[in-house]
Image (cartoon, rainbow, N blue to C red):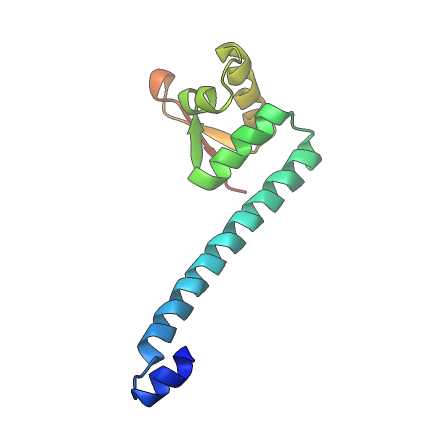
Length: 113
């Protein structure tokens, strides 16, 4: 009925359909990208025998490009900060992350392989 009304009014839906299709394409690209990140994280976690916290940190780094101890602390609330630092150091030793900066500005960025 709505389509018939549009046809009778001689309205062109092309701009709306193009807008909708562009929005849908953008959303599909984002879903694909997130799916690829999850698959990559899970494959690396299995390959390198990562614990759950390391998997969490790696997932965050894959999404944002890097992670800090402060950000990791927010993700893994209640875990001792020293444990989180050891987890991040383990990811560096496995070649998954690399350090940038120093001391209170230390970031753990994705290693470029």
